[in-house]
Length: 222
Image (cartoon, rainbow, N blue to C red; front, side, top):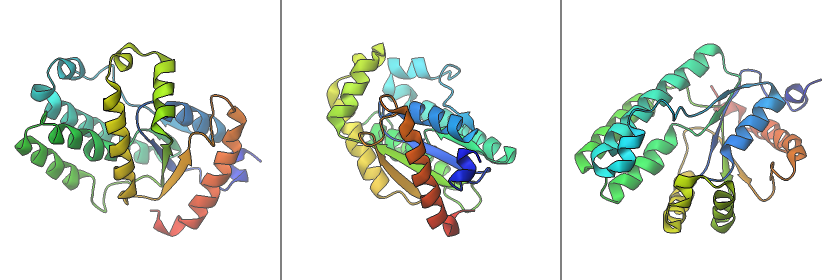
């Protein structure tokens, strides 16, 4: 019996990993996909035509960037479900509006009219009964100081140059966002309880929790 069958996780499940920068989404995505023999879905950053322009001028390009992400994530979500599920997804479509677009609006780097247009489009596309929501969203959380330590240790230049206050602000926004999120069932995992970098064997404990949680919330799934 494989691990997916052992813990009763459906072969067509779609599980999305969410959480702030540096919390371990990619590591969790790869570990779960490997353990369950699922496919992965990662954000396509290299082909984004707006990313470099955005970092040069937030005010000018934030709306374009968010519209691009929305379109790409919507197409990817559709593709996953048309394929028949069996996917682990790194970052959700919901974070774009709930975290990033909202932050640009609040900080004045997205025009209020653009923000309203974006959120109206998001609601029309995503927040409907017809949109294929994931079976489960796994939210990775942990103390902000531990997350910053992870960001510093992985040494990505763009992240190293970012003021720490930005990470504190994003962490706060993520905590507020997840407390009000209800588009699909949410399983919260503390990164200090399940550190896959230090203890890869904890993946089986995570699978046990996922299986039990999905069984409990099966009436909420599609």
